[in-house]
Length: 79
Figure 1 (cartoon, rainbow, N blue to C red):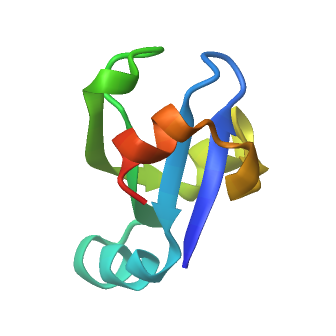
Figure 2 (cartoon, rainbow, N blue to C red):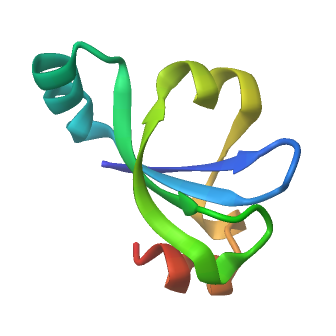
Figure 3 (cartoon, rainbow, N blue to C red):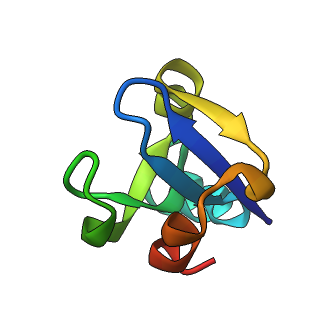
């Protein structure tokens, strides 16, 4: 399942693949998810795939519905 978040400070959007958490726990012992996010804050063209911790999502992001993610971000995120 894909969940969408918005960073509270920069306002960037993230897409999180929830099913990847088991992989990160088993192989790295980390409570992380695979996600798509910007490498450079506020630069939608710099979207990359990266590991994102549950703690970061809790403290620096807010979950949003897909319908609230701008089309430009959805295209860049690829979901």
